[in-house]
Amino acid sequence: MRWFIQDGGMSFAGLDRNVSPLVATLGQLGREWTAIGYHVESESITGLEDADLGIPSVVYGSTRVAELAGGYGFFPGAFYRPEWFDPMMWTGKRADLLNPTPAISSIGDLRRDWVAEPMFVKSIAPKILTGMVLEGSDVAWWLEEYASLADDEAIVVSPVQAIEREWRFFVIDRKVVAGSQYRHDGILRIREPIPANVWEQARKMAEDWLPSPNIVMDICLLPDGSFRLVEFNCLGASGFYAADIARIVEALDDFEKKHFAPAAK
Image 1 (cartoon, rainbow, N blue to C red):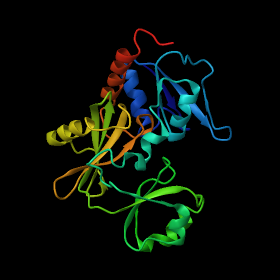
Image 2 (cartoon, rainbow, N blue to C red):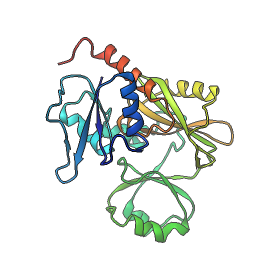
Image 3 (cartoon, one colour):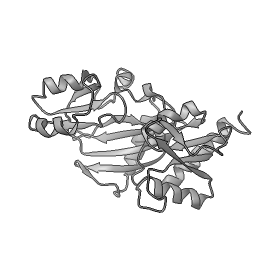
Image 4 (cartoon, rainbow, N blue to C red):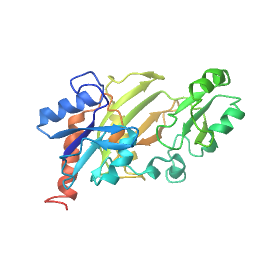
């Protein structure tokens, strides 16, 4: 599987927490990769002059690059379709959603009628407004920080729930292949090992309905001991945290052999 990796402006030898370890892992495994860029004004992917898009490829970078990849002919590409990551599309399809019935609102509504009690807020479109908990006292800084967001940008609003731990799992061909803890009691902690029972829980959750067989699945543990699905994320635009990148790369190689070998035209 050929990799096309977005260079965000810093050297691949730099300290980027996602790109550098990915490139290092590809080098260790002897896999090929190509640096690509994103031109903001033209909203286009650059660095494809000599690229062979007729071979199976993975695109890794920003959500916008993931969105654009399909139009360039990358396959399987960044594993992105907008409906896969719309929280309203998940409603009713799984019984273990953390927020099973989110309310639809808009940025304009939020500005005009600020939250009276703590609420979880997230844009429906990916990466416009990342998920966050807002309280009544947040109004001043939030209105200033997000003044550029359009009033008609759709958001989902849900009651806040207490979460003890959160993990991210990479699912390829409906199988959990790698994972990482990323929060413990609300604090970013990625180095704690994942307990065996959590791995088993993630594998079971991956057997339920998924927007795509190749996706990133964030799950959490609640104080009552139950596990819930927090959200789905794009495989080609999600941070690895402490996940084993080599296992992800090798699983994608196996996916290519299974679905595209001996060649795809």
